[in-house]
Length: 500
Image 1 (tube, one colour):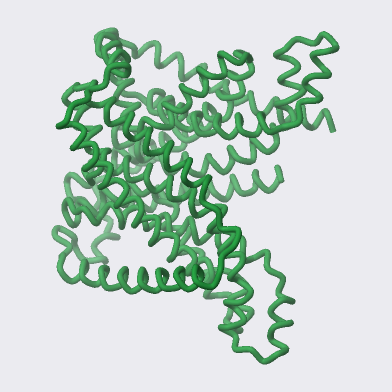
Image 2: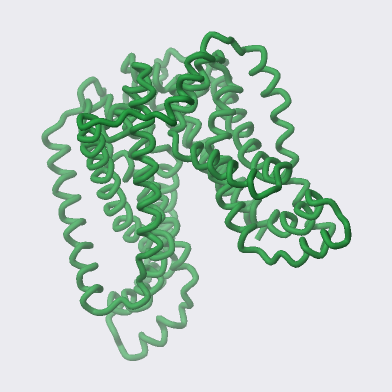
């Protein structure tokens, strides 16, 4: 058993080898012209701009961010629950519907989940123009699919015998279904739903960088004008919003859901559905697909993409995913293990928080001030951002873990670093790798963000095709993105199953 744990521990550090070729290319591409700007950026973090005018702008932008994030979350949670129900096996058992329809729905949800919200956003923006509502729609499309998967997985744990017991009293099928799924749906909402609200706010910020409004737009404009003091005012405001939202989520309890709250949830449920459908119809009727040819023309072989060049872009995207995943997996345990003291841990946590706080495109733009655009730079950006996320999980698990083995090894005279590695981290390595396998699914989809900004892979090609309204190419790129994400999800699913 110890040998098995040690293998998982070794696997956690092995991906750091990707830094060898990555670091070599970064060193070759470095230039010193932007270090002065980088220094100014760091100094501005301790001297943000604060006056009446910018405070008013911050409040307005935060309101936009919260509005888009909240409505995206509300709609995606409700429709995620609906699609989660109709994509669960128990639904088809109760109503005696062939499972063929379940597979079709799951396949459809897998496709729309495989494409990042930023991709949906820039495609919709190119079709409809800049529209405040597009941010909500772009976030809702993949989030509904993600939420439905989580809800469906929870409903799969229901014992079918529960329905058979209820069915003995001749209750209607719909009533029986609602009776047995109510508690799993509520528990999933408690454990997962509120976390998705924070994710929705973060996605709103990223979409804002592409012109969808909110504080993300102000962050991008400040960076473009090199107004770093103003930039940090927006970033610190975003940090306060995220910290406060996290504290509020911890305080919210749903231990006792009474009848009044249940009725209120049902009312909100149906109002949101009616509003969403009516808005969707209004949006479709009052907007037209300008510059968008017929559906059949999308699949014509008139694309200007060369086969070899396109395969190169696909390979770049896959390599970008692998390099970023390697950094996200190995960097947190390596840094925490080397700098294993209380003072260093504080600095690591602060740095990891900043990596999570600063949107990925902004991190990439900062690094571009002293390095040329390259695959390695895009991988470093995406890897650092996700390392900030995986390090948060690792810190949380390590701090809640039993430390008796660690203390015993130190008392035997074993070094502090070795005691941490074998006495603490080795017990977390398996679950940590399982989470990283899940995180790698997200990294694959996030390659679109750094691809658009850093002129790398399919993200760059998507931006180029959209700029020239080449919808045949856009469709091919989206299909390729979706295929890579789906294959990656299948592979990571096998990895997660082997680790659980």
